[in-house]
Image (cartoon, rainbow, N blue to C red; front, side, top):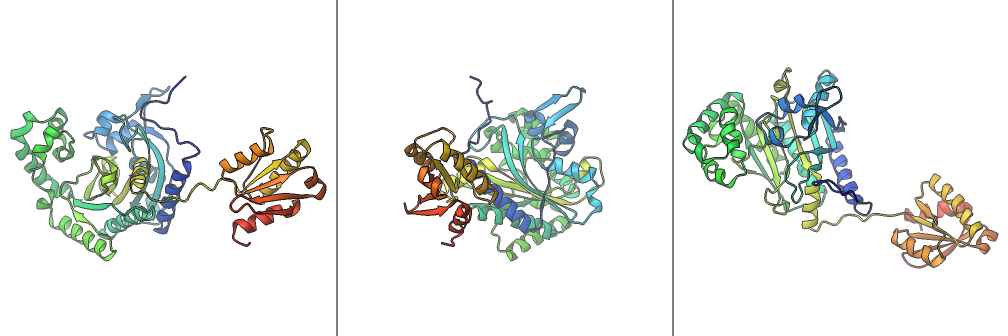
Length: 422
């Protein structure tokens, strides 16, 4: 037997309703804020991620699924959603349309990393991107959307942490301070940190190695190096969030794991999300398009991992509406009645009623058992007498009551019952 690849997971029919629930809330909340869905390719040219995500990140250096196609071009399965949206924004001339540009996505993404709870090699994300607005109100709106989304799922035990990592101007002085601080300790730090020391010392703060954490804990804070513009921007973000009723705490340790971030960065965390704790994260990335060789456009966004959200919802014992199953099961007692059931099923489906018929030639008792397993509210029994009368014996599985219903009225009867018009 061929088994599933490590780091991937099947979503079986019995569980997919949970995914539908999260995806439905994501669409509902994003569209309430004026965002519309965008769909980008599952693979892109490798250069997009090297330039967009950043060549000092673990994603680019260690985790991407990259291969040469038959044209000898380097192709990468997307490891995240933002770079693809940025490419689509540029390539399709969306900067010339109505601004700000607001888009959301529901995607699968791929990273070769050690599988753990809530983190797989193929994983799924809900993300939002906003282009064209440089002001603090845009940051606060995106964060408010993220907060509304998590609350719409029924989550309550999460916290919002925010920070500012400044702009190119004030980060230059900060990088110098970090290099001065880390220089005496480099020999005791991991190889990745030694590489980041020259390329982007701020990335050293995001190292997960325990041996490095004892040094990063005492490092200088970016908040102490913010220029006047960045400081004013961050204060405005905090004011907007306070006005919106979104609770937060300032956490100077947040730098996020991607090179394109600037100014505001944020994370929603939950103790139920495992050791790293983050269920949703994002920030501002005004220099992303510039890193891709284009004219800079201000932007801000976030992404949430679906698998991790499911884990946190289970830990908080969030009630999710159950899978409704089919509305009606049509049980035939012999060959002529099975044919009538098949005909009625076609009529019911055209009328918007979900239904099933017996395809296994089971006994009536076995059909009732199957209907119960499938969650059917109604079982319409058809036998010789029902064929003669042109009416089915319809049993409501919720209360075991039964009614005789004419074939031509069956769809209306079920729709009325399902819609509460009893």
